[in-house]
Each structure stands twice: as C-alpha cells, then as structure tokens.
Length: 314
Image 1 (cartoon, rainbow, N blue to C red):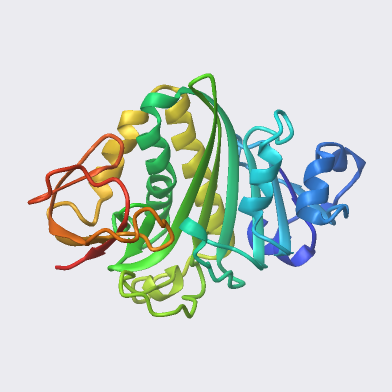
Image 2: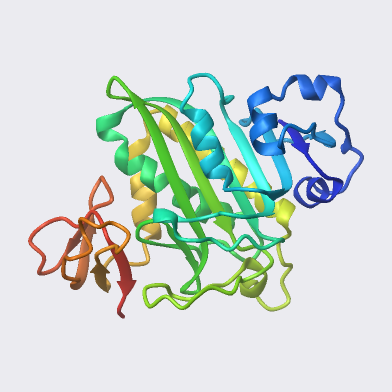
C-alpha cells in the first residue's frame, strides 16, 4: 500500500521509523487523485511517501492536522461516482470539527488514531444494514485482540462504542451509498484513544473514557500509534472481505459475541439530536437478544428497539 503524509512527524508516528520513508516523488504523486490532494492536503503535495505491508488497501493519506472532519470531507467526494479510489485510508494526527454519531464532538488528541476508510461494495441493501453497522466496531475490537495484553478484552456498547474495562476507548461511524437496491460503497470512521484518554464533558449515558496506554496490563508494553494503525487497517480489510464474500451474518454473530449489553439491564433513552424521537419515554429492562439488524429485544418492551442511546444499569 502506498502511504503519503504531509509531514515527516506524522509519517514516522504512523509508519514507524525505517529506511522505507522517502521524499514523495513524481511516481508517488501520480497515484494521488487531484480531488484527494485538494480535499485532504489543501492542494499541497505530500512530503513523505513509503510502502506499507497492508496489501488489501490501495492508498493511505495522512495529515498532521485536518482543518475539518475527514469523514465529512470524504463523504462529499464519495457522492461523485469514481472520485474516491477503492480501499482508501485517511488519517489525521489531530484536527477540528471531528465528531461521532449525530455530530457529537470527538476530541482529536495528538497520539490517538483518527482514521477514515472507504471501500466500494456490491451488496443487496435489504440484508446489509446490520452487517455494515456491525463491521467497524467488530473490526476495532478484533484489532485490539492482536495487541499484546489486550486479547479478548474489548467489548461493544450498543451501537457503536468499544469498551475496555467498562470504559470507552473508541467510537465508530458508518455511512453507505446505494443504487438500485444495491450498496455501492461504505465510509467508515474510527476514533481510537491510543496514548491519551481525552477530557470530555460529563455524559450520564457514557461509561467514562480510557486509552490503550492507560489500560495496558502492569509491566506490559504500551502499543504505539503505528501498531494501532496497522492492526486496525488489517482488521477492517478482513471484515470488508467478509462482506464481499457474502459473510455478513457472521459479522453480526461476531458483534453479539462482543456485546457488553446482552443479558444485562439497560436503559435506552431517545436521542435528543433526533427531533422525532426526543419526546419518547426511556425504555428499561434486560436485553434478551440482538436481531440481524442490530435491533434490541428488551424484556417487557413489546417492540424491537432500533434507535436511541443505551446506558448499562448493572
């Protein structure tokens, strides 16, 4: 995979030190679409290039500081057919305007991973909603399994948060494009706290925050940003391959295995950022099961619960 960066600093932190880092040359620049150069690099040429052993990705572009959410920027480009290359990664060291679901602010702290991935797909839309929603959280949890000291520890809080020791270490986003009842593309956003647990506003529905550095076992090595980036990129590629091969239901099964909420008492409250739901009452009860579209079956609730924000009560 060709890796391009705007500064030696972000290149070293994500690709690691080594003889592979080189000034970006004409052959490297020829593989960078002009629209990406303008959107991610402000029209400037990248300074550094290297080749990384991430075979299932075609191109990664990293910037020290993004002036706006890269998820939003690439969403705009993806509206035009053929503008974004398949299997694209974009990474920012820090930036402004980053956000999670419903536009909730995400604090982009240097030392943490802020990654966006784009892939082209050809899937039936009717059966892909659940697998596509499950994919980024599953991939992230399984990426953590590959880091020393973290195997089997990551859990998923419905719908899109990843927890370590009951605290949030990552959040995910997904957006899809469809045509003629087929999913044609997906954009995935991941924020993973690697080195720093950011200061965030109190949220009664959030379980607190942590980072990989804070959660590493005593005496164990703390993963660095390059290790986390490679692990997440490999896991995302594997799970996208599962989708392309028709193994979407397996992704939902993997999500269930990681669920921090199954069998537990929860409260699901209407999301105040969704005006049509804001007036509804909270729902409380034990989660009995999770459906194929990631809908909850809650004891005492006579309908599947597909939207809202969840809090663990026990």
